[in-house]
Length: 567
Length: 70
Image (cartoon, rainbow over all chains, first blue to last red; front, side):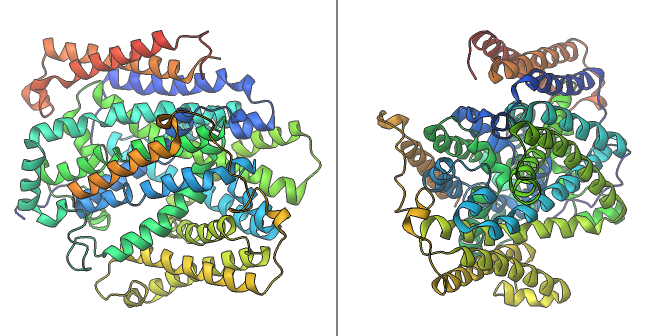
């Protein structure tokens, strides 16, 4: 590589003009207006926590995707694309699309017809109170912590990019989210997420368009990346034969079995933050179509996330460095690539829209966390464990107060992270501990009628403990990574994949063994909860091109073709 | 109830007009060379703003209140 190392960070990355500020202020005014407009439509529990279960497939599907499309996700994966090349696309394609289609066609009917308010609620119906308690408490705890970590990280980004005061960013964004979710509940969160989805695309899509124009098209871009980095930066699969043939230090087993079969399945099918949006769909067809619509758009998110990272490799005149190096040298880190590309192409107005897209991404992620936390706290912790005799009105009020308290806890976490930066790494690692075992528990519960309450509880607990143990083992002795990831050449990302795979297997094995040793539930008790004992509701007598399975097939074919093209 | 798509139309329309206006201003009053973004000469603000305005206007018209769509 011939690009020189650079540079001391300027006081701020970009300067907003008057029109940029107007666009940002208009965004805040509009989301608050939506919250105030919807305040009269959140009076019952169904309205406040489930948006009245009246969302169309498009609204639920775009909200489902938007809740995941946070600003840190955008900037983090653009940075990963700069660091690892097109391999980062796996997190958007094989690490998302099969799981979203599986959720739509296999799991959604069970969530929907059980009329549960939450994923822990399904565990209660299927496995009993202990499994729900473990899942609900861990989810609620981690959700507000993650929200606080993201809040701090976003405020930090705004400080670096715009020179904004951290306190100002934290309080303005969190209070705005608190107001519109408290007023309008899940419906308000969903409406704003759909709005944010459009703003994110409108603000970010210009970067790949102008970037490809500057680079001279995709073929020229590949040539430039090959010259400046390596040919392997533009291949999805051909370098995954061994840990040493690709910049990520991972192999195909980790991607296919760790990422696609466990982590992605766990996240997209059991993380209540995203599943809650689908549960608000108005009927079974909408509930099945929503994840398929989300998958269709998810396939194209790399255009606004991965491609800017790759373009940064080719067209930026400076070399970006890891965060740890940037902190010492003052150079720009990998994570700055998206704002740098934004500043490179966007003049007055467009810059404001791009910044609004980042803020919108952050707020949609935070609103998702807060609304999911509120529902799980009220329905899965407060009602069963603290006060089971409240009226519907009482639980709605509890939901409103929980929204405010959840935001305040998130703010507190953000300030805690400000004092002790290492907390951020721990919290992000902690979150990953729960996803893989939870997927094992839920999927066995849905597909295997012999799974018992004791099996579900102990499987979930042992899977989670094994995940924590492997993480602590590698933390204490980094050389242990060779055992967890099965290779001395494995790098950090490979650890996540294999750790998830092993904890999932531990969960499944423990669940099966304990279930076989304990008394099964009767078929009558499992009707509506388990495959084979439940008449799956039909989407109705509609033309084939309106059926979810048809569109799942279309998305599946496009997914397959894209992987071949970028092999 | 006012449709969510109407709110999106308003957002695209207002932002589009602001960006279009800012793009036109830069077209007629170009900044100094050192203050220009890359590919300044393609005037992205003008056509991107115009496109957003058009899409926003279509959404606002089609989903205007009292059409009873979610």
